[in-house]
Image 1 (cartoon, rainbow, N blue to C red):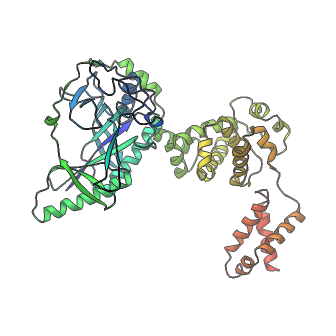
Image 2: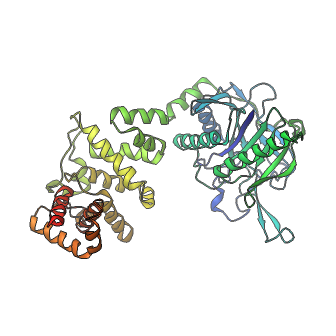
Image 3: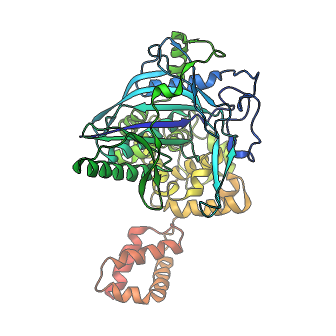
Length: 503
């Protein structure tokens, strides 16, 4: 039987300062060893001061993972020597006197299986080791202490995973959860790291460290299971040790013997008193917690009747879920519907191609909710720059404007590409962008015929191929739509192309 457990280290990247001092938590913006002070490098006489917001963020994670949190929490010194730990001990949490860490006995469901959370603890991140040199003989190790003291939450699971795939699915769920809670940005380099513990057939546990990505961790665990099974089949004992993932050879290699808990000589941190967490503390945090991903997903499906696949994509993407509500509120404001158009775009008040949705109409939520969903997933998601621009109020209003057009069959990608080009090149106002786009449909039959003839002349090979391959017709329709920047009626264009092909 295979048993797999995880130790996940999650930096609380959304905090301003480190765990025990006022140095910046965002160490990535500094040159090496420029973001340090006597406290985070452990100089004699320096005293740690606990970051209150770090405790709050860690409590939110604990609650989201269905953990129990004790009334009092404590901090301990974990003693070990390593070059990236300047004071030779790490301030962390340890359940020596019963549960005193920020969370314990939690659970999360992964593909129908319950994965238990043994413990969640707050601790400081060590510094970084940077290796330079082309070979082992010329390699040197540099130490950057900027990261030392960064607020960190360690999530320790029970060995409930049965295969590497479950590990990857769990980590993806955790990334979405942390992002949704607003406690961390897992996309930042080093913000979320995970070690694996693997054992087979009741044998010794082997720890896998220094894996750079979830994809590599899945491969490392798969290799380690195969390695251990091979040893067991040959009657060789599996040694309890720490192994590293060799990305070049795609194997795990022995790093050192596995330390026991007693090797760390834990004892209470005398400079940080026990902290009492009142019921008021928990109640306030519950009020601040955002809706869960499942709650968002259910709301999108029931209230807006968005299909399950799209609703899941939006609900798991924090930026998309926030943008969805803001865009919808702009499209269908609760009171004066004309307010947005009259204040943001004066020209819109008389524009013939705009309509004002009635917020009292029961079909409005379904109609506009689905239009916004399609725009976010089919267009914004496809263009990386748009995702960055979603942070701007003006761009969200632009998407709302497009959703409010009478032009039902307009290709959003075409319009948004025009907006993106204008926005990046000239940084114009929304009103100026609005003036540059022709939202009117082409209805003149003579114009249609001329455009179809141009496409037939330019795409002679495709026209010939259409006789044996009917799918080519869609390609020709696309070419006409491109020429009109989406203002041609697709059905009318299709009918004209079919008619011309017959002749």
